[in-house]
Length: 490
Image 1 (spheres, helix red, strand yellow):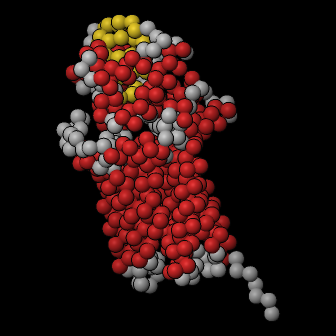
Image 2 (cartoon, one colour):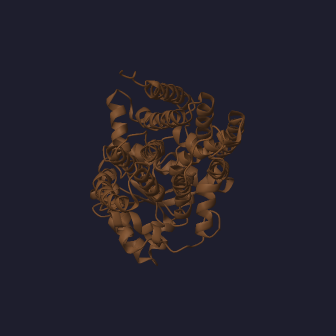
Image 3 (spheres, one colour):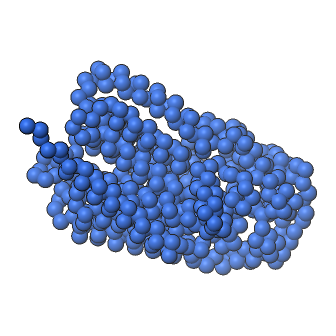
């Protein structure tokens, strides 16, 4: 007698897919209607790149925007779509993962709302930046790794290999800081080997082979991020992590504390604390009736996926509203859903967390839209007058760069890099800014400097070298307006 095929798994997967599509469609509409006018972070520089046709190091985001422009959108609308669409797809992928895992539509939707309400997610889904695409890579990378580590009965090593490759590719092509989840990924690959009945000794040999292949794939795929035109190499990506701690000008706090506070605690504190609590609750109640079976290795993978970025962010001066911690958010939201399911009435609890996250989001967005400080308004008015909305401004500090981008929408770079970076990384930034400056000048987009930067260069050889490179084959013209005095390189 031939047994009837089991269609339950197929129907469950189909339902998870449909839920994911529905969430993605609703999300893209919400993000599109809630889009912010404020520029932030790399937004102005990315938009300048699309208008001049010269890609920045975030090449996949550049290609996505070109694709949107190819559909008939103007550069501004194309750049907006390149933020809304990937973030919405990320929420759809998260919904599909939660539905496939728990098969509870209420828990799935509540978990997605928790993630969407997080300041980092909503902020970067509704402003021109590269981090909506980063969120998509983070979710797909985590979902692929988790699925590969928790296979259906009878799954072989091919599914683990493909899942690992998809995870690595999704993570590394969408933002370099996504590799900070690598320790969690390693544990999930190990768990996937053992879950397929591989002995410990054989798993060690296979694990070594997969690791070598993963490194090779990462090096090849990373070419989509690394920019040979500006001499960026893997070593120059890693070198900033070796910075010596110092006090951050924006807050006066030691750099490691400032980074963890600004990039982790403020934008995702609620999800960080409760998500980690969810890991612990789910593990403690893994044997309870109806609970999700969370193995020891899966538990450690969640911890490492989350805490790896938090620890690594104690290095360079990160300040982008939690974007550099974004890779941890899918794991935290997933862990929170596990804990809520284990405790009982999960949907109301998750919705309360979503409300708490939304209150943080509202505060962060109000802060971003706040008027400029009174003592900076004359400076901004003067800079606006001399630039007339064109060109690239080389700011004296990161705080000044954020101020100019937020209130004037002018692309900026931070001259502090030429003072504090080690020689190899400084050479990268010099090549990058020099190439950008010349490309912009050729297209009638001048580079602007405050006169204080010229005075500072007289006693800092590294900064003087940078300004000399910027001015090569160009002319320095003094400019002045009430509140601002400097030069225009054209």
